[in-house]
Amino acid sequence: MTDARDVTTSACVCAVLPALDEEGAIGGVVRGIAPFVDRVVVVDNGSTDGTARVAREAGADVVSEPRRGYGRAMLAGLARARELGADVLLFLDADGSDVPEEAPLLVDPVRAGEVDLALGARRRPAAGAMTPVQRFGNWLAPLAMRAAIGARYTDMPPYKALSRAALDRLDLTDTGHGFTIQLMLQAHARGLRVREVDVTCRPRVAGESKVSGTLRGTVRAGAKILYLVARHGAEARRTTRHA
Image (tube, one colour):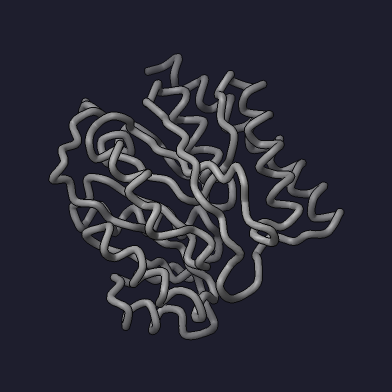
C-alpha cells in the first residue's frame, strides 16, 4: 500500500473546481488560484452559460460532466487530476467565495507531508456568505459525525487539500452533496491525519446559490445529512473492520 506520508515539497498540485453556471466568477477564480498550483481543472457540470469557455480562456483544463451532481463533478475532476499526475489535490468552489490567496494554508501542510487532509474551516463567514441552510448543515453534519463515529470536525468545507496517496486509500463514490461527508467519514475511519485550518468565506461573486434558504429546504437538508452520515458511517465502519 502507498504510504499516505510520501508527499514531497516538489509535489505536483492540481486545483479541482466543480462549476455550474459560474460564468461571472470562474475566470477570476481560475486566474486567482493559478499562481498557487501547477494545474487547474474546472469541471463544467452541465452549465447553460459560458462557464466552460471563460474557464478555458483563463487557462483551465476544462472537463465536461453533464450529469448534474456535486459528487459527479468532483469524481470527474479527480479522474482528470490523476491523469495529470497530481500529487496534491486542492478543492475549491468556482463562485468566488473561497479566497485563492489562502490556498497555501491548505496545500503547504499536505505537500510537506505533515497531514493527509487539510480542511478549510469557515468559522467566521462574512455576512451573506452562507445561506441559512448552509449554516444549519455546517452545524448539523459535524455534530452528527461526532455522534456517529467520534470524528471531531467543525465544518463541512468546500475548500480542502488532500494528498494523492491519501486519496488512493479512500473509496469515494457519492455523486451528490454527500461527497464531502463521505470523504470526511472515510478519512476518519482510515486514520488519515486531518487538520482544520481557519479560512475566509466571502459572498459569492456571481450567480445564485444552489442551496435554498427556505424552511422546507432546511428540513430536507437536515434529513438528508442525517441519512448520509448514518449510511456512510456504517459503510466506513464496515470497511475498517474488513481492512
